[in-house]
Image 1 (cartoon, rainbow over the protein chains, first blue to last red):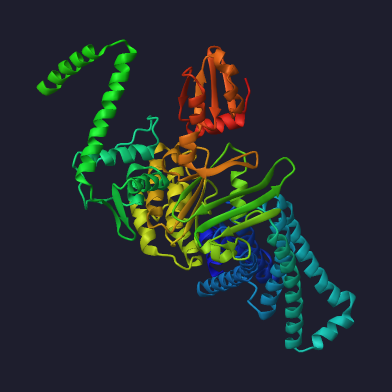
Image 2: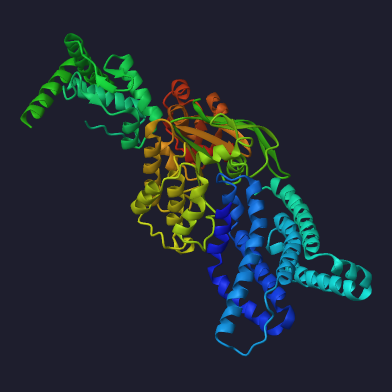
Length: 211
Length: 127
Length: 287
């Protein structure tokens, strides 16, 4: 399975440079939300690009001819999302370190645990919504969703934050009074539920797919 | 050992092989105990099917020309001298019969055929 | 277990085409050519064997095992070469090997390197920079580097020059030398098979026309040519295909020896090539 993810990285050597530029762009433009936006965008671009290579090369035919079970292909794809997110976070860290070392007069959002959770939550939401579509219809046919989903997820997360703070302060203060652990665990639980559900659908689609 | 396969020939390929190996035996170029290439090796070299070479060897074995030792390979079998001579004679006879039939078909009689053989014999001997 | 590949009553239905309960068997140590015109069902059959398509009925056994239940084990022991696609064209040969090799339990780097050397392939080249013949050779090297017992080749030679095709045939003849391996070779370029194939399975319109030894076909089928007057010979009623022209006719018969005996020398009877057999079967008895 690791090899399938290795392949995503080998294929995207050139994309990484492009992703770094994206991160810098989000750092400079998005202010305090820069970390979450940059990390999520980086992971999302890497994911979409990996899927584009799969589609263009009709890789399913070869992948399903080597000693692999179909489940592994689906699992590797979901796992790759976390690894792409990790790459985004590390890249962000390296760039901010560079900025610090060079004493550049830039205000950038710091890396925080909350931010990391935010990145994971958004990319998982994005991937969970998009991957079943991709497994069913392929990359090209679902192109229209790439931007729509990205916008929708950010709007949704923004709305949630707003809802908690302004519209339902009771719930917000209730959540604020919980310890970090409880919040983390509930978010983790929610994420696992979403990923699990999405993975179930993708697996069901891919298991019966014909190439 | 030379074996030449003619794709254009009407004879099945296995017959071409058996005929040529038999000929080599008659001519004394292959003698008792000589080893033959393996079925698969011969097929690869001649670029033909394994089944063809297998059939050729089976026929040769059934007719007593070769022996196959499982796991070791195929060898030229001991030939009965008289039998060998007889077989050689038979081949000569067959060729003559073919010639005689052809000659009769165009109206030659015995004397004419004899005269022709004498003339041709001289020619071949002089070469 | 002498059968490497057994296909029994295999069927797959599509709206405009279906594979109709086809059956054939490939034994250890032999090369089977799988022939037929484009669209006859060759690729569909291979995709069903590789579980890339789901069968509607029948059975496929590879090494005696069900091809779906033992999918992974079977694929570990199969080497495949497809006409297309070639995996990720953006990867180099070396990268591709790195990704694929670990999936095979018996991968042997040394053998792979030997083949690359033999083929004059550089590991640093990207797949997309290679010629069609070279791409095929990369896959052939992969297929031969993990002790595969069954090679499945789907149109590996189409679009390749005769030199490369001959090279492939030489390698296949080497592969079957040890009597343990087998080759299943689909192609519409039948001249590749006229020489080395042991068995021929001919598929047309989703049906198997015959699956037998090539020798049987070559020793029995005949191409009969004659004058128009000979057309009323009753033996011609059994002809598979018949073609008339201004000056005479040509027909394909299944038993040329019987035809030989039944005719009075008014015909020319020749051994057909596989290509001619396909042609006559697919065209039928048109004028």
